[in-house]
Length: 353
Image (cartoon, rainbow, N blue to C red; front, side, top):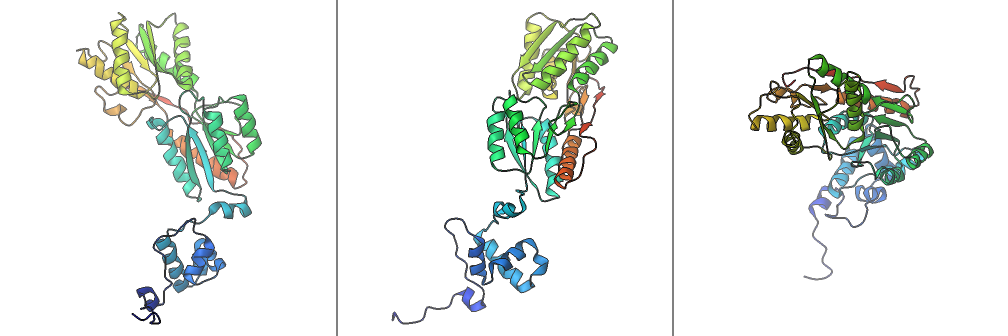
């Protein structure tokens, strides 16, 4: 072919549409999109942020370029002018516990309604990495923070005060929150569980408790309340977190292998309690006639174990929704008249105890 021969027209040039590269190198910019679409950068910006102001044909061309190049708007660049990142960072211990997942989903849904994005960080058990994790989170300049629990190191508190952004602590209560708090009293949960079981006539108690600060608070209140009635635990076992059904089975085996014969066992989670039920039945024991079991959290499966599990109900979704509502109000410049929200709890009395 003669080198001077014209290049055959492509399908894109025939249609009058801008030709888009199959794969871009480096980070595609708004200027790149404007060149490919044959419009000005400000028109691209307007199409992305206020499409109703752009002519339909121009909007279609820009959207085609965005789709075919995989362009993602640089929200950080836009945030420099508005001083908003549109990010809310949340630190939770683990994704291996349905309690926290059931809280994060409603929180995410609330924030998404106002175009905020939830970014999760996992602190683990115990929260030895919270300070470093928080430092990394804050370096991304989130507009707000969600923290699990109300106990933080002095260095963490200093860093949080310096951030000067809305903060909500969840899954616990304190009369003096860092900013906002949505949760319930673990002390009252432990005491209420003890009184409920004592009121049903049980007098020989054991417990299985996770190695977690909130579980330990509930357990301490449980033990103290029993002590007020002249009762000491016959056996207590602590397990690592996140808890599993296997841990529950193994804990039950240890209780009975050491010779303890409690009438009832209080567990720091429904997952552990589920394991206890399984192990008791594998040994031919009847629940609650031979041994009763009580859990905590009222997870989705608790009503469907055999027998159905007696437990403590906490509205996990409400914690997430209320935390989201309060943060959005603060981000909108509104005053929160009640910065401490107690979602409460109640005991669900089922067949296992």
